[in-house]
Every structure is written in structure tokens, then in C-alpha cells.
Length: 131
Figure 1: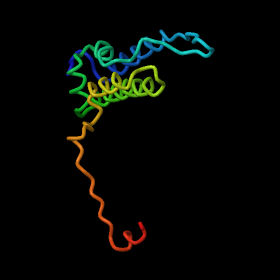
Figure 2: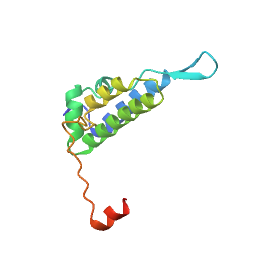
Figure 3: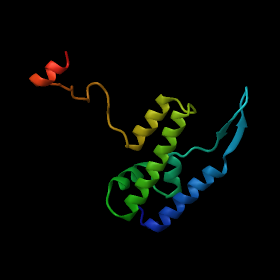
Figure 4: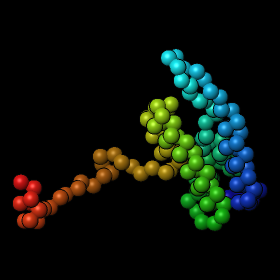
């Protein structure tokens, strides 16, 4: 954990980082009408640079206890929310979004090998109802 920056200072630095990203937002007209918005995206590496920690230190500290860990966890969740929103709006591919969320350590492994099979057992009353 960085001794250079306490939780309060870390929160201010993260707020400034997100404000800088939001400050680059621009509306771009689309063919056929409408607009899309572009901005410098929220990223783990951008967040890490803002708080003067390596990405690994940010991820590790966010799993820990204490005020700094909670501040960093909120920052990671904000980055994850941004990624999910862009993916749902079709502005980011699902593959890229999934890889970015996995990098943040905020997803579970949902591969077929990682998920236990679900077994449903019906009692006699439920079985009769299902016919």
C-alpha cells in the first residue's frame, strides 16, 4: 500500500481522474440521425496512475480492509460500471468488456467447467403437477 497517499487524498485523486475523463466527453453525430458520446474511458491503468499505485497494488488493496481499500474498491466498481454500460449500449464489444472486467477481479469464472451442474428433484406432488 502506498505510504504517499492516504484514503482522503486517494479519493480526491480518483475524483480528479474521473472528472478528467468526463471532461473529454463529446457528442458525435451518427449517420441517419442521433448522437453518440465519446470520452477517454475509465480504466484500471488510468485509475492506478491517478493514485500512484501499480494495477496489482490497486487490486490487492481493494480486497483488503481499511479506508484506502474501500476507496479503491469504489473506484474499481465505478470503472466496472462504465465498462458494463458501454457494452450494453453496444459501444464496446462483449469480449473486450468481459476481459476488462476479469482484469478488475470483479467477475466469477462462469465457464462450463467452473459451474456445478444443477440437479432438480421433484417430490410426488410436484411431479403430478408437472404433467
